[in-house]
Length: 543
Image (cartoon, rainbow, N blue to C red; front, top):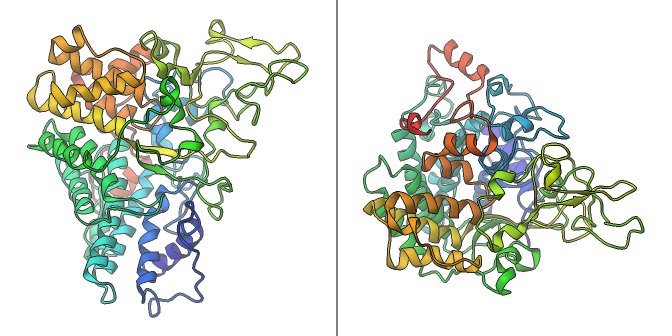
């Protein structure tokens, strides 16, 4: 196991020390052995930084020296695919597609995902990230045993590592349901413990995630360079986790409200510069880390997916139809929104027409969706709503616009915004009281709506608890379009099957993705039972 830690350190030096803007200086080591590494505080920090690898944005990584993995935020196989494409946002990608798993995600069709194999670099099963959790657990043990670090620095580093481990568990829970993990450093390398491949209960998994995130809130630094996480980001993630699991965990709604009260003193607010263009402008490169941003993946203009040149953002290549034109006229004098790129690799992600129609008239957030484009043919044919289902599957997401002539756009990837906090707070108050919120909670929702050019909630949305919750789910969808949380939201509201069926016209094959066959068979060989599919106890009511 120790040699794998050293291997991880070498990856961390390559992937992370240059992965953020003006962040961490590269360190070059000679021969690394357990006898000479880690020894200094900077060594222990480098060891900690390996825990960021699944959250860096490069084409792929390999922590364990075995199968390759894709990070949680890389566009082709990250949280957009798991939690947005699978949701009610996205129409089934049935037009101009190469097929395969990318298409099946948009169809909410996971029936063949049990066939994913460990060594498939194109579709690596996220289940293999259990190995990352084990690696982080060992690193946490090494940090805890350090005699070099001061008590404060040790707690900071362990807090950061535990938060990162908790977030890997958080995402795996929302991909597969509860999964077996090793969280005790003394169990790492023990075959009996490592072969205990059985699902824990939902309550157990929830408690493990909670413990790691709470430890992060209590011990992480208050400030950090862009790209490295802070206690405020941990508070945001914990608030969201409390809401996700509050229906069966006593006191979680109160804890979510407490996270809001801690965050509201930190000076965050809605980005309103520009008035009617404020919502769209906040995602542009000129406004990185504005007042609304609690956390984002900090990307670099030099990023190329290799890791050596920083986090990169290839998302635009997955949003634009392959036949989109750079110019709207044959003389090439009228640029389109795609003038710096042209057609993409395929419209992996789209906005379904039926979902687009859920926006209220005058909602400024709808302006980040393009309902037509110019095809790159001799006539510069205009592809419109009339061509949905024939020439394209859904509308184009222009929330993260192509702003510069560059291979990839250095657009930061939003992870936590104040608007989300305001909506989460209103939800926490409503769920706690089983009533329509008033005062500060309702004002937060209406402030979000006001920026979008909309009047305060009224009518059915304020007449009853159920009416408010329905309106809030709609509000969250429009505000957080393609920010990697929609499927999780739908499951929390127990509307996943209902909304997806209504928008996609397809019934999801399951609530969560099945665990791969190879893992189920491996568990059987150890005398364990690893159930392939999981659904929450109330999924039967989602109709």
